Image 1 (cartoon, rainbow, N blue to C red):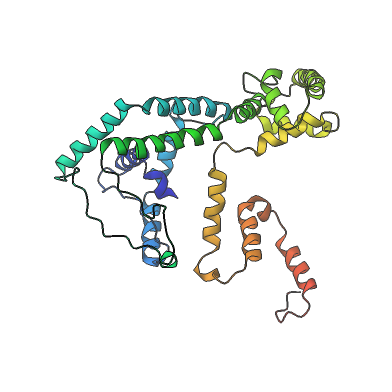
Image 2: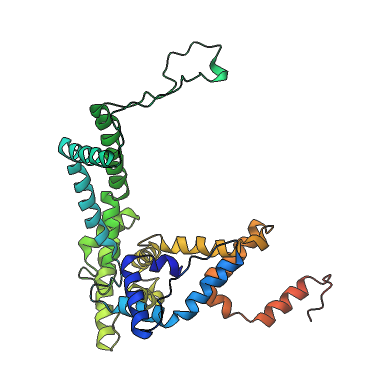
Length: 330
């Protein structure tokens, strides 16, 4: 994981600089990518981390202290970025952009001494064996694209069109309304509890305007009283904790808060669970079943709750449920 982080050029430069500042006379140590099968590679990677641990800590500290370091990513800003990407891709779908890309490719082929105008020889395609006794009128193999016009219409334009369609499907108008509503439930956001921003999200999840309007009015008065008492909200999680005792009175707003906290900004949480599963499903546990891997994954992902468990009580329950075990656990 550290190797992937410090593979970034900015983090790598800071890491090398910190090592030279701390130990001017020593050669900077490069972090190693540990192998999954060779114990020697894993040992070397751990030794490199141990030698450079102060520099690793100092690197993270400097990155987080930078004024332009992103502390959090708002969901509403994703729509603006998506719109700009879609506009850029749409503008690139033009003959001028195609000529620019083609000229750059031609220059690269010239430098590499590659004849890009030469048509490669292709062997005669044989029809599939299960179609030999049939009359085939459709085209079996794809005709090679060689002319510049064919490359533009059959390769360049379809790729851009597919990207634009997928971006518009992923960031549709309904999705934009949901993202704006999530931001409106954040106490630090400028549109906090704004009805216009919350209405699209409420409509998407089946909350009517007649129910949302009085709840917003009452919850604003509730927050004003809490603020006078010295309780100021910092994030959406604290807002949900404050609303939990009043969830019967603010049913729809409480539901929207729960939804907003379960919508991820990125897929980092899912990727961490996959990485955790890779550490669990190793070569020594290759024969473990799905149920066991799922249980071990839950214990590893929710490690804070797992560490809070009473291990002795778990052993007692396990021993009482399996009286025929040969190992005496009581």
